[in-house]
Amino acid sequence: MAVDVLGARWLWLAVPFVLAIVLAAMLPPLDFDVREYHLQAPKEFFQQGRITFLPHNVYGNMPLGAEMLALLAMVISGDWWLGALAGKTVIAAFTPLCALALLAAGRRFFSAGAGVVAALAYISIPWVVGISTSGLIEGATACYLFLAVYALLLKTNRGAALSGFFAGAAVATKYPAALFVLLPLGVWVAFVGFSKRGSARLAADGTSAHGGSRHLSFFRAAVPAAAKRLSLFLLAAAVSCGPWFAKNWVFTGNPTYPLLYEAFDGKTWNEEKNQRWNEVHRPHDFSPKALSRDIESVVLTSEWLSPLVVPLAALALLGLFFKDRPLAASQSLILMLSAYVVFVIAAWWLCTHRIDRFWMPILPVVALLAGAGACWNVERWWRGLLRGLLIASLAANFLLASSAIWYNAWFVPLDDLRNDPRRIGQWHWYFNTRLAGDRLLAVGDAAVFDLQSPVSYNTCFDDCIFEQLVKDKTATEVRAELLSRNIAYIYVNWSEIDRYRSPGNYGFTDFVQPAVFDRLVSQGVLEPLPIAFQGDSGRAYRVKAEEKL
Image 1 (cartoon, rainbow, N blue to C red):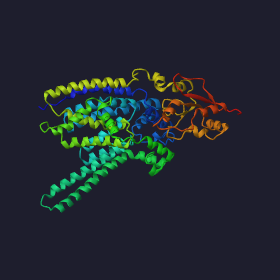
Image 2 (cartoon, helix red, strand yellow):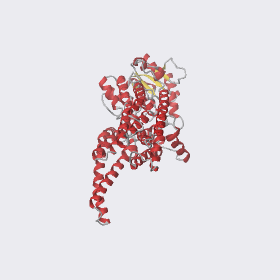
Image 3 (cartoon, rainbow, N blue to C red):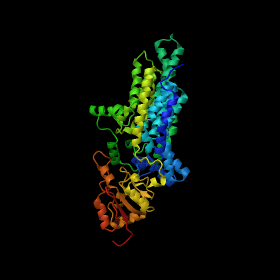
Image 4 (cartoon, rainbow, N blue to C red):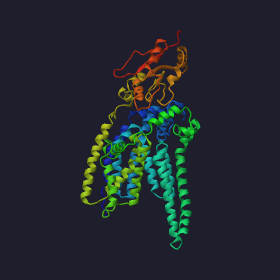
């Protein structure tokens, strides 16, 4: 009877992490990006009754494949608030789903124990838990990435098509997946089809043919096979991500809006915005010191990584050099998976602004390698050591992941959490509980998901609505503009504006200054609300009714 490093009963150790992910995912959102566009964009689509272009929120015009689950829940429930929480929970469920895929892949390509280790290693990573519970969508991207890899490893035309569909689904959640998933897997598909069919043709021809004719025969067989597999892959990818590019093409003239402005232009985008966007979304420091620091963080020092995943993955590679310790899978598979991990990290470092979340989707592949590395030896001493290390690692990970979920009001009624000022901020609480119903213009504040009143806002990259309504206009014209849009209040988030204007940040229009609001107050257009919150620099104003100026 074969001995394995871990049995299926060890999967019970995943239950605490699954419960923590599901319970925390049901809570209202805290993360800025989630409240700015991951849930705000579906909320606006729901309120408008259609998926459309958002000229005030550039992020809401990017692929939103995962966020459509929240929109679907909003439509089913008829409530944007409850639908958003349901969608946030479904998005979090991609992480347990990915763990199940790792379990299956480990069993298929390595051993049953490798699948168990891979699943436990992935679902227990504190970083993965934190991202999954926050409403961020990298967990969905990671799941699609791994399913695309898994399907590709089946080495069939159906597998190539399925891989393309999942790769396209990854792109439909986040633009960088085109570089991290679609491009390398497309090359992989073509290479496998080319080498497999060509080698089969050579074997069929035998050894009697001359060298030149053998090579010609190889290419005649290999090129059509590679083209067929690649076509299947790309067609399936187009099915799953193409509608997002078509949407942007119709609304803006740029299928990759706001990217590739130089090639496609794009509605509401211009050269100044494009330069500012590129300046903050590209890497700047290519020094050896920066490379060393970032690689060290990726493989060793990040406090949110599991202490076992990278060392066990390294064992999978090291095991290739121990001929008397054969691994339970081919060397080529481990080398290909390792090369893919290296490619993603290199692309992240060379082509992005190096936010850690951008390379997080490759972690399932690292976890699969960790499962393979765990099986480098099945002797009793190693099995005992591995189990002890696994228990200690999972315990430490659970404590760290639990501490990261500081807003852990898991059993508090949702009605109490909806307007909790600890979560939404004091000004949002004030508008929801004291001034709900009238339209608000938010200046410098784009994380407006929780506001229950109608709200006009813009991100720091979009045209400033306040500037459009006020600049170069008389007091009478400003009042008329505000009233024509039914704007009753203006809220200015000075702390956010200062953050945007800080060195190296995204920037914010220079027009918005305290003096502009002081002038409008003195002219009788605005009236300051007689309220201030300790430690909060935000200010709010009421738009005064018409009067002679």
